[in-house]
Amino acid sequence: MSTEEFVWRELVVQRLRERDRKECQNFKEIIVQNNRLIDHVAQLKSDNLKLSVENEQLRNAVSTGGTGPNVAMATLEKKLLAQQEELTDLHKRKGEHSQMIVDLNLKVEQQKKLLNEKEHSLYKLQTVNNSLRAEVQLFHSSLDELKKLNTTLLDEHTALQLAFSSLEDKMRHIQDENRSLLDRLMRYKSKDADKLNEENESIIRKRSAKLKRDLEDAVREPNSAVNQSVPAAGGTPLHRNSSPAQFGGGATVSDDEFDEASINGAMEALGLDDEEYINARFTAGETSHDLRRSIDTMKAAGYLGQPNPTNILMKFEAHENESHAVRWSPVGRMVATGGADRKVKLWDIGKGATEPRAVLSGSSAGINSVDFDSTGSYVLGTSNDYGARVWTVMDNRLRHTLTGHSGKVMTAKYVQEPIKVVTGSHDRTLKIWDLRSIACIETKFAGSSCNDLCTTDSLGSTIISGHYDKKIRFWDIRTEKQADDVLMPAKITSLDLSKDCNYLICSVRDDTIKLLDLRKNQVISTFSNENFKISCDFARAAFNSVATKIACGSADGTIYIWNVNGFLETTLKGHSSAVNAVSWSPNSNSLASVGKSKRCIIYSDS
Image (tube, rainbow, N blue to C red; front, side, top):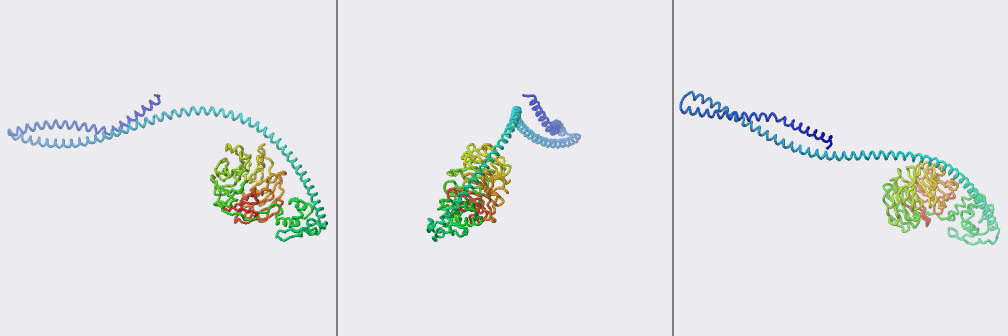
């Protein structure tokens, strides 16, 4: 036993003795008085015995006669009576004192029990104290080890920081070299693009000249092969002939004199497709007004590519409240939608079912975007709960949950599928995730909230992101370098890439849609309309499957469809409130749309 513990025990015993002494001090006077009473009672008993003897003697004397003794006897009787009264009083006080002694003995027993309990508790506390002392010693030893380890880590950190500074200098040097190489590459690409455009313009001029010569030859021939009956769009037979009024070979013929069958017959006879015909006429010197009227005529007859999906195929309530996202599956006739009710739903459009094929849950906040992988086996969704999730289409199970952003995640796309995923968030970062380890392997700091992104190929070598600071950013994940930005006139709400990765559309908050040629990194066309208004900060525009048309919803519930050549082909009605997102089917000429009215509408051309 240590000296400190012995002193502590002696101090406790001393304090207990002091407390016992103080408690007994209150009853010490009572005990002394009781002892005095006992002695007094013994003395009175002795006096009483003497008086009894004297009384007996007096009685004997009285019995023998005499008056003097009678007086003495009376006196002694009075004295005896007084002594008896005093004795009775003393007996009474003795009884009270005895009762007090009994009560005090009970209290002493209780105090002894309490003392035993305190001693037992003291023993337990002492045991706990000893164990705590042992733990404190163990912690002291651990603290010493951690201090030594911390010193070692600080030394390693200093060494790593020096190495990092050296590597950072090398990286800056390499970045400067890469920047200069990239500038040279862009200059070469720009020269190549200019040369290609010149060659294309030369080819178009030659074709237009050939077209004019062929038309003039066709007009001069009296028995042309195109002099045959052809049914027009309304079902009435129309005749193609060699007159200038129908082929436009003469200088006095306008586009108003062309009928649809004549245009179609001329294009078939010369072997021209729609784009070649338009370019030829524009290069041949026609005014934009005449070309516009001719284009409108061909557009109404459906000669410019696919007809527009103007018919409502299906209409159903997709979510309990506002719907935010929609996407067609790359295989089959299935659509995925996401809404503010925290659910992703799959719809079988091929069967015309208005009940969802599956409801994918797991998100704790509203869904912002949905996407499929290239095989249609996985659904990727982003949410306002700062996470992204991957579900399987076959069994509708939640496979992966990707968390790490500090702001709501607005968009996600597959990169090097099905291995990696890239996400964009309002925390101003892009994160690349490895689905095999379910971990973030790279973070790109954009400096502005990301609203949408896309990748240029299946390998995801380049990521294109649109941000609230009005910039489109290009990220090369092979070199971990950011290419030059493209500045838009307002913040960007969505991006979509053509299949050949040459063209990019960008919906902008100034109520326009920009078409960019990625070979030049330049805006080549702007689409707008006086009634077209971007519905929200995450409104989605989309290319069709062959990248000849662009669709986007408006704040008034109308969907606008433009041809990539620049003119508005049609508008689609059906929504009663703002349209948030649209998606073209990759397998058919169908368009899916969702909006703030909870409704999903499928448009088709049949």
